[in-house]
Image 1: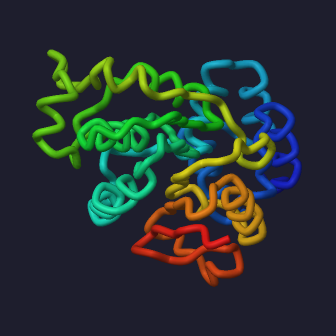
Image 2: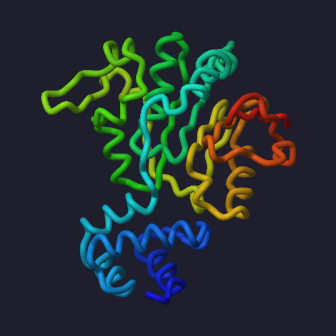
Length: 256
């Protein structure tokens, strides 16, 4: 398993995922864990399996793109979103909101619940991800108990139904408000004129150069005075160089 550079080229060709943009050490460790877990003898055998086995390919893509999420993740951030960000972007406006790297949809659904509670009316609630399997799970809106663990009880009672197997399904009234699309942060065109963009716990897997490129792209997609929210391990160094101002923990505002 020595030719990691060849593996990156093969994965790009088969899955369309450009691993040169990711931190080598972290990504290589994840891939090695996958190879060992599935008792594959080499990177070549992994590539052969990905090429021939659709189910293995889908599972590997989900593993590689690290689709973990839960509702109202990081209470400190969601408190500010609820108390400051959503009221500001909704004042005299029907805001456009984008959850990038949305995974299984927990984040965008959390935002949708808060918008409904405050009776704010968005013009767009968009959630995107590279992994189509994750997007299908998001559209289905069925969640394990640990994925809804941070949800306030009043929202569980109002917007969720508990199934007999212990899973929770989110109400159709919330699901139908969100548009889900496949989007590659590294290659796809970014839509514009958003009032709020969330891209949380995604940057940490990319190289510093790729992070800078993505931040610039997101800022260009924001309206003037729009908000950009990142993950707790992704504080932006020198936000002013991107035309951003830090307004709270993990939350930035466009100044240009």
